[in-house]
Length: 114
Length: 114
Image (cartoon, rainbow over all chains, first blue to last red):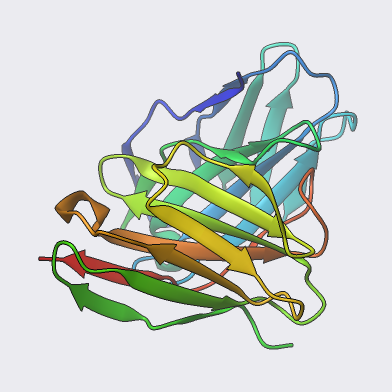
């Protein structure tokens, strides 16, 4: 069965600094999708970034980028120039076989220090 | 477009009662998924509906059930409530069924069981 592991339950970063959130996954499939979702305190979960496994190029969205290492089954999220509004719970998620559900990691709570 | 809406936002029930939660997906979205979120267990998948059919189900007891209507709106029902059912219940919609589709989350229903 596929699994998603986020090894850092909590992290802190100084405002304007760069932080990297880790995510590893286990799968025997070759085609799949990976996501990072952000859940701010008391607010709705939103998609941060989406990566298709068959694309070599790492996805980027403004200050957010990923380091996708397919062979290592690693999918880390880098946040550059951290802002107070980046404080949230971040979930890594995997979507593989069409007939299977999306699998979420347990999340990493990110604190931004002013 | 209006986002995913969930009603009610907050609910307090007592053990043994039953509860029905409602989710209205983004217009045009045909897939609805439900998740239970707790501090200890993170996001746990309950079920996914597409075109009024349950396509996937998580590892929850039969007390948890759901359905989807022809307009894609979905309800989930929990019967014989237990203290451990206290959680944030999230609904997410996507355009199509599974595999790579971005999920758009609602604000959640906070259920407290006394």
